[in-house]
Image (cartoon, rainbow, N blue to C red):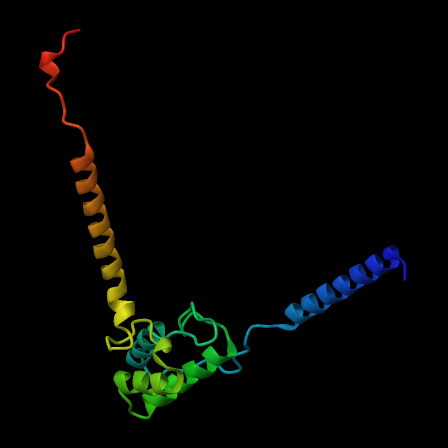
Length: 155
């Protein structure tokens, strides 16, 4: 096979891969919610919206359950509403989702030995940066030549 034919085969393969990728994206659709959630009263709706706003979509990872359109988010919203109607408290619902998906599902993870670095890591970085800056300033001050009295100089 000549180099030109090899190059042409490579371009064809790239074009086929691109077309398949575009076809895959075109087939992806937002989750269809066949029946929107119906709330019994405004108190239930408010509690539901407050709860799903502080829970993370396990697929999107940067959106709350309230904001996500992924099918799993739709399913989890239904699950949360079912748990609410079953009489579970907000904490019990959070515990259920943490047991199922891990601490990641919470936007504000609990303070525990496994999340200490997450909670206190930024403070450690600020303290370490302050110590480095302090040490550099002391070293520069010690290494600087003494300042001459400006009044002693004549112009």
